[in-house]
Structure formats: structure tokens, C-alpha cells
Image 1 (cartoon, rainbow, N blue to C red):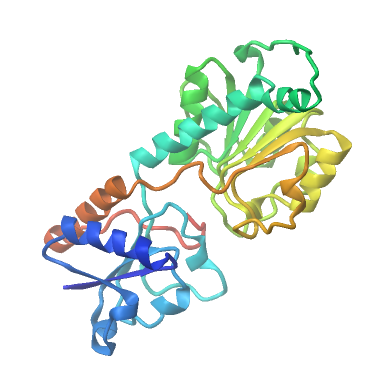
Image 2 (spheres, rainbow, N blue to C red):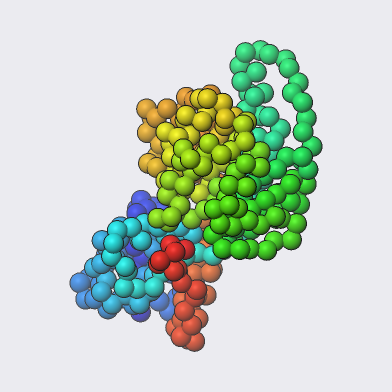
Length: 312
């Protein structure tokens, strides 16, 4: 059976994925989209995708479902047209572990005043800053899906005071879980460090704009490991420049790679990362994708699919 691999990856990356998937699914024919014949495009029922051009998928009229090898699938949901196929995003425990590791690492970076010490070193200033115990540092986690829950639990394990917010009510042992607009306002006003792990949906785009960023407590710090469009860049720069936000660690941006001329590169209170907080592990992702496809072939079992109205 032909399963197209549809991606925006470079040739080498695409070849690596196709090789790994082919090894895990020896009874299937994993074929790059560019090498499909017209007949193969007409008959494909399943596609494996990596941030594809949605127009390519429109050339596969027989699709029943697509399996992303990444967690984010917002590119497929842009525009007014609803896809006529089901979308399965990658739910990978290894991805949750990697993300929670990054959230902890960069929370500690802010917690232990590393940006300030970096600037002091540049000026040859020897000035120990006051230490704040972890239980007295409140970290707010925006988004309590798989990645957010894993991150909140790890932060709590390391002794931080953790609160979380999500669209619907959640219950996590040891973590104060909030929802709704009032809950969002409470989280913003309490957080010393705000960690954004929300999915990108029409409701979350621009959520951290002038109105909500102005609700942060003075001196708060921001980590955005979600999607660039959730944060209004102009609003963030304003809050940094007036001192309400002390520092921002940004791994995602409205345009990637971040243009060389962008203000973020040289801003003293911004740490720029090249979208590395939770890279997909090929071996782990391939194992999950392969098992889901085998379950569909042999048991007619479709994995959990994305709610196209909610966007996740």
C-alpha cells in the first residue's frame, strides 16, 4: 500500500524519515509526495506528514486520515475550508519529557538570575543578587495538554510553586489549575515566570498582547515554547522596554528563521533560541506512527484525532 510522506523538509531530512518509516512498516510503501504518480495520488488513503503545504494534500482526494510526525498541526487548519480527512497529531511521551526538560532548564535560568549575571559579566561587575527559594517562585503554565501537564509536574517536583491555566478545567496533584478569563487574569497577576505551552488556534493567536501582558506582575519573566503568533511582538517589546517584563526566553517566532534584522536578536532582555525546546525524536516518533498505522490496517482502529473546531 502506498503511503505518501508529505513534508516541507529538505531532501536529506525527508530521506531520513522515509528510510526510518519504511523500516518500521515493511508491508507499506512509504513514498515522498514528489515521487507519486497521478494514480497513486488518487488512491492514497493515509499520508504521513511533517508540516506540509496544505495544497499538496488537496492533490490526495482519497485521504481518510493523515498522521503528523510533529505535535503542531495548525498549518492544516488555516483558512476557512475544513479538511475532508481526519488529522492525527503526534502524542509522544518522549516529546513530553523533552519539553518538560526544556521548561525546567530555562525556568532555572531565569530563577537563578542568569540573564542578569550575563550582563554583569559583560561589564565586569561583581554583584551577588538576592537568592529566592524555589517555593517562593511562582511559575504559571499556560496550556495543560500533554506537554503542559508534564512540565507543570516536573516544575512542582523541583520545588516551585506552580499554577496552570487551560481552556477547560483540569486537575493535577499539587498544581493549582485555573480556567476561564478570570482564571487567566489570576494566573497572569500571580506568575513570577510565565511559561506558554498553548496550541495555536484562532482563540490563542495574539492572546499575549497588550491587554494580557499588562496584567503581569511587575518584573515577571516569560518563556514562550508554544507558537510565535500567540505573543504580540510589539506588545512584548513595549512591556520589556518599560520594565514590566524583566526578561523573555523565546524559542518560537511569527517568522522562522528569525530574520537577521529583527530587534529580538540584540535586545538585552531577550534570549533567542532556534526552535529547539522539544525536537521530535525520529526513532520514538516512527515507532508511534507505525503502531497507529498497524492498528488501523489490522483492527480498523483510528487514533485520537484533532478537533478541527478547537484546533487540537
